[in-house]
Amino acid sequence: MTAFRTLDDADLAGKRVLVRVDLNVPMADGKVSDDTRIRAVAPTINEIADKGGRVILLAHFGRPKGQPNDAMSLKHIVRAVGAVIGRPVAFAVDCIDADAEAAVAGMRDGDVLLLENTRFHAGEEKNDEAFATALAKLGDLYVNDAFSAAHRAHGSTEGIARKLPAYAGRSMQRELEALESALGKPERPVVAVIGGAKVSSKIDVLENLSSKVDALVIGGGMANTFLLAKGVAVGKSLAEPDLVETARRIMAAADKSGCAIVLPVDVVVASEFKAGAASRTVDANAVPDDQMILDIGPKSIATVNGWIDKAKTLVWNGPLGAFEVPPFDTATVAAAKHAAERTRTAGLNSVAGGGETVSALHLAGTSDDFSFVSTAGGAFLEWLEGKPLPGVDVLRQG
Ligand code: 3PG
Ligand code: MG
Figure 1 (cartoon, rainbow, N blue to C red):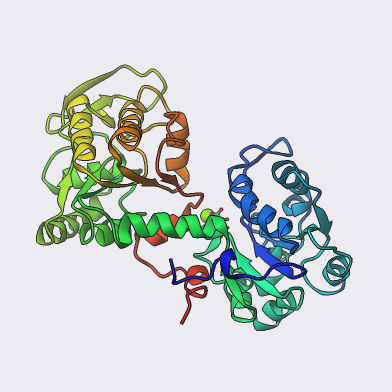
Figure 2: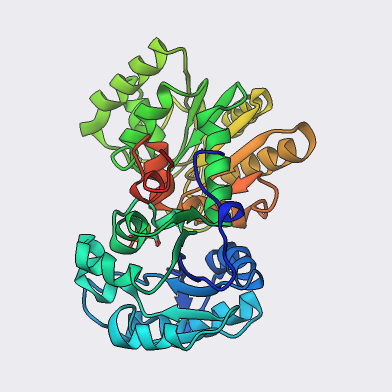
């Protein structure tokens, strides 16, 4: 990973270090309900503080659209950050100008300060030059540890990195190394499992992957559109008939580059999408008119697991069925468990990411067994699409 400067290259003692973190965490009843993203950046914060740097945290929270907004204040998150990193965290009521400058001026080596939501200023999302300059004025160095916000070309993710010596934090470094190992220079065969409700949200992902991986397993509601494209009737199932041509184009592109497209051969159907709804397994080409596909069936699970057995590298995004409602989580849980097992016992490199994916792996109890689970939602998808990530590209050297 010589392409990026990391904390190994930075002289941190006595420096004011601006660290971009992603504290866009879920809340319930005024409390952080999942602190995964805070835990992800804790090593970077603690390493800088331990080396005598003054850690100034930059983050967004929600989408306040350039206006201060009490509900989206980072003051609600300060305590959770302190609890995770195990040291006091001070808070400044603004991220630039007098309030921020005074708070920074009062810091000592090893202190940690969280600045208010960067998105309270319109200049953040506009990546405004003056805003980035005002942020940069607060520090000597810049560290980006927020891979999950790196698809945004914002003041605190992109603009500032052009104004200060810029480094990847440890979480960013791990994300980039994992992603490089999965699609950059992967060990083959590479199998991608892509699920989720709609083809429309993942067209670019499927197109990009079809030229990069050896097998593309398609599950979830998306698979129904592919079945339609092959002339298979899908009853009342969720599907996007307008995208049948797109599905055909993706299948043709995959065929040309020698990528196997793996679709369900049997499916679990019910007459309604409801917990405990009476369901049964049918062949994929025998879906009754009044039934809908809600999961892939046992033969399909065995096929997916067979591909996972062949793989040296696995990229996973999206559930295989309507996993929020049991028993339609069966295939997702079974395949996730199988991938976890192959990771533990057969050296499979398994990389997963994307919002729903992380919940699905948690549900299967397997998130700790994958080689890497990204903290990113949108950024992980844009990476799967092969798009440049502005917050990453600006960190590249030379
Ligand atoms: C996320 O939660 O995916 C990141 O923090 C980015 O947030 P955004 O989608 O509001 O830019
Ligand atoms: Mg998002």
